Amino acid sequence: MTGPAVTGPAYRSPLLGRQGAVAATTGPDAGVAWHYGDPTGEQRALERGAAVVDLSHLGVVTVTGPDRLGWLHNITSQHLALLPPRVSTETLVLSPHGHVEHALAVVDDGERTWLITEAAAAAPLAAWLDSMRFMLRVEVADATPAWAVLGEPVDAEGADGEPVTWRDPWPRLTDGGTRYGPAGDAHPGADRAWRLVLVPRGELAAAVASRESAGWRLAGTWASEALRVAAWRPRAAAEVDHRAIPHELDWLRTAVHLHKGCYRGQETIARVHNLGRPPRRLTMLHLDGSGHLIPVPGAAVHDDAGRPVGHVTSVARHHEQGPIALALLKRSLPEDARLAVVCDGGDVAAAQEVIVPAEGMSVDRPQARGPVARGLGGRPAVGAPTTHPGS
Image (cartoon, rainbow, N blue to C red; front, side):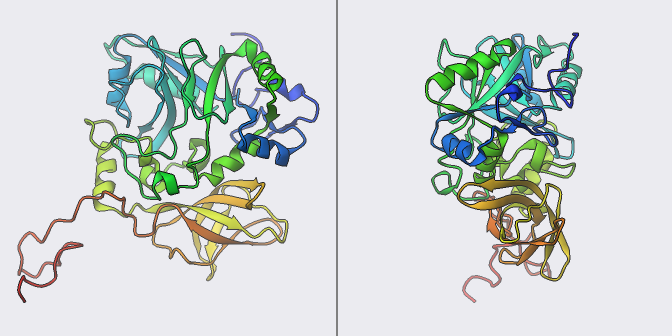
């Protein structure tokens, strides 16, 4: 392929030519607009369902062939073998030790499976999938040069005759999943409608213009990220580091099926679910905005004794909640601990809003078994009686 790159550091969306556009120059959204001059107005329009976001920097990988769904089922965390056409889900590629390597938005159109991933992940993902084909009837392609992604606040799957569309399942509890945080109707992300629409890359501007003619406005990633953070929605390019396991991020809701067959990393998934207590927990932070200081992703979080207890993963300015962030903290940190986030110009005070509880137990964690041999001095298992019946 010749010409400028369509993803990665060299990518620059044609929509950055719009008047007022301010590019995101660093981070995972570099190459598209951070905002178009009115980030607060754009965020409000997005929240009321009247805006579209240019996400044309994201990666797109396709898998074709009659074995595609069964093959993806066997090598990722989600139950994909019987995925119906135009029904959206998500899955994770895990390391042998259960750490998250890729997060994939998945939808099948009846002929091919579409995988939407982070900007920098498409080429490595396609290469890894290609290395796993063996003798199966599947073909993998990095389709990013041909297809662009738009984000829109619509809670609907794509219908026949419409573009390929992925509807975000978050935070609904999908079949075979479990949760650490609140139930779907009590979850702050329950009212966030979101889907990704695939359009031919050469038709990106026209697809946006058609939505604008219907009364929508063009919004930047400042707006979409603020609503994502407020919905506690994990993102691979932000919340995932080399240690991350899905339990820490409450990602077993939508991306993991606990009752399917073996796949890479499944032992860790089952062990942490059964025993509880993942090492860290994702937490929402409400930041003190009085000093007009905003930390950056990766900033250290300290407790009131000055000890490091975690780090910030995402930071946003919400049009109603003000400065907010997601952070990965030590699971054992008390849920009411007073925190400070390191920031240039001075530390910023932060209050926790619990996502994954400090106890580290999912709502359907199996009951602990009793002692193997009662009376031999062993400590009873958690939940086992500490006295003999009738005593």
